[in-house]
Length: 231
Image 1 (cartoon, helix red, strand yellow):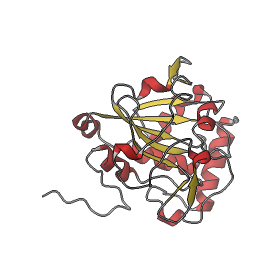
Image 2 (spheres, one colour):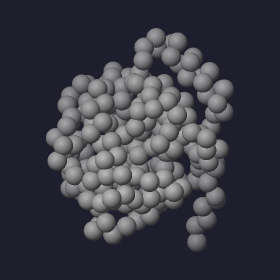
Image 3 (spheres, rainbow, N blue to C red):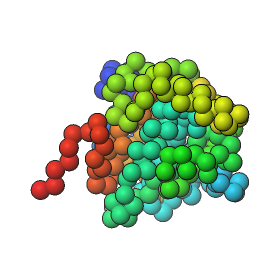
């Protein structure tokens, strides 16, 4: 692979995405993917109790939407996970799909973040960001000029920063590295890659309904999406 090109014309090299070939937002044939799981599969994430879970075990038996989030005090991340929490369990069960969120924070913050967002599916953390680094996720302070295109962003810049600041004051602890950007994957079962997107900035998350569509899950009506009509 030399390089691929996203819809916005951004070139992505092999070094940046670690042996994977695809175009964002499309559903390529399995032969289009060349992803090297050799390093990532045996790396560990932490559950709420501090137990180590192999990354490869997360998607081994079932198709899984894996969201790598930003730090837990990020209002953009909070807005996104709040909407992810609205995906009905019956939609996932019907499609045989699960959702997993991984954050770059100490595992002791999992319980409080799930309570704040209403998210009740599986959540792990990678506090040292070792998995984030192996999978080529970016670390930069960029907010993103296209925040208006983010279908899950509920706050404006000022109100969002104030909200994050207030939560940080209450916590009095960092809940993940502030420069760390995230990514979205659809993996499994076994080492099959259905979709991958590495975020360029903090507002660059893949729309949730796009992930659901690719995973074969029924869409959800979000305020910024076009109305869903059942026929």
